[in-house]
Image 1 (cartoon, rainbow, N blue to C red):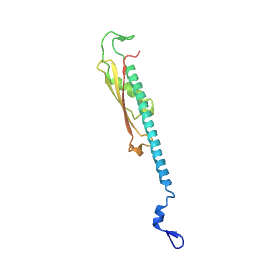
Image 2 (image 1 turned 45 degrees about the horizontal axis):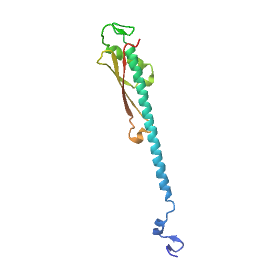
Image 3 (image 1 turned 45 degrees about the vertical axis):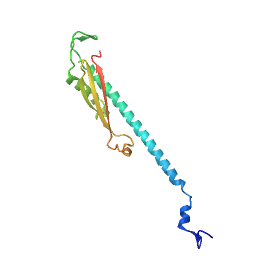
Image 4 (image 1 turned 30 degrees about the vertical axis):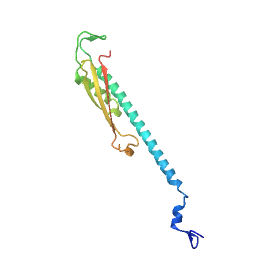
Length: 155
């Protein structure tokens, strides 16, 4: 019998030529690739939802800041004199709005007055961890940033 040495034992060369079981590494590799793609999709979706939530909170905080303003000379939406927004009052109103919900505690907000003197502009930022973030080198989380503005008065 060619390729065998006594007692039916195959040679090492014959064992390497045998293709049985070669599909297992291919299936495992495809499965691993599919898992990485699914994890990437979940991570990207989570980051998108967090960014969208931050934009919503920032928009609401801008409205709260603008709503707290009572400009002198503005009654019923008709301006009789150009005033300027008190920045301290805007920042306090925004921080009070954010303090109402414990989930908003990590959001950092910086208020500013627009050049027109009647609009509130906010820059919001928060660092949050995302699902499967550690797989993609984002174990420390992702920093989301957004901005929003609202014009005073709203009444």
